[in-house]
Amino acid sequence: MRKPVVLITGAGGEIGHGLVTRLSGAGSLIITLDVSPLDATLAPLVTREFTGSITDLALLDRVLAEFEVDRVFHLAALLSTRSEFTPVTAHHVNVEGTLNLLEFAQHQGESHGRPVTFIYPSSIAAFGFPDLDTKSRAGAVTEDQFAHPTTMYGCNKLYCEQLGHYYAHYYKQLSADAIARVDFRAVRFPGLISAMTLPSGGTSDYAPEMIHAAAKGEPYDCFVRPDTTIPFMAMPDGVDALLALAAAPRNRLTRTAYNLSAFNPSAAAVRDVVVAAFPDARIGYTIDAKRQGIVDSWPAAVDDSAARRDWGFNPIYDFERAFREYLIPTIRQRYHRR
Ligand code: AKB
Image (tube, rainbow, N blue to C red; front, side):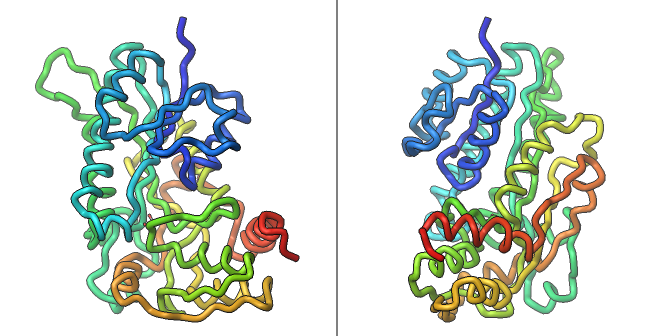
């Protein structure tokens, strides 16, 4: 009999690093799919590594034939800045790739007769404010407010939330013999900050880039104004959230996509704690008007009460603790800087 495995797409990325480590520590059998080979720290933790694209249907068929997948963490995506440079490619990867994975999960579920839990990281990019004034008046937004994204990535994320909802509840609703086999669950992540890896191609990247540059002793030019404010979260809380949502009883879930929030610092507040930790840090500001426009369209805060109520979301790290206990010590150690 085949043993159930967890499939992680985009496993070599920022979230994947933490997730593979946590799941393998808990004894899960993991298979991965990523366009690049996994690095030497992750490769030994997985049962099988597939190198290729989520847009490659033949590759997904091979995975389907060889493994019994009962959970999918679909992390592979082109982030917001990168997607604005190549919107058609972004749509291909972010939307058609997700559609391929949903079909894959449905077929897996049909073949082993159980629902496949499908965890999808959506994003604060699913929101969109028309102007800064509306953003500052809005306060902490609920999932259903201001869902008018202004980026290709945000459109892709919002649509894929809906697509997942369709697969979970309405799949082939007119066919008498079709049973929906995808148990789709999504979180809207804020900007994530990891001590271990740097993001690439995102627009919330200024915060992690500032910290890592200072720790490496390199100068950094922040591309948004000092007053720019969006929600952020420390990576361990992000990984915990994915695992908690995956483990939650289905009947407790009242939504398809959940806001998550931990702390909402301005760029200047991030700079201040980084300079306090690395007094020789050289951090200036060179505003990129277009990337600024994207971040200005994202909320300054989100209301995550549904996640807290339905599945016990409860991040450990607030702003102060994230820097004091996680980011600064781990990053110092990583770059050997006192
Ligand atoms: C990005 O900046 O594109 C991502 C996100 C907020 O989803 N980090």
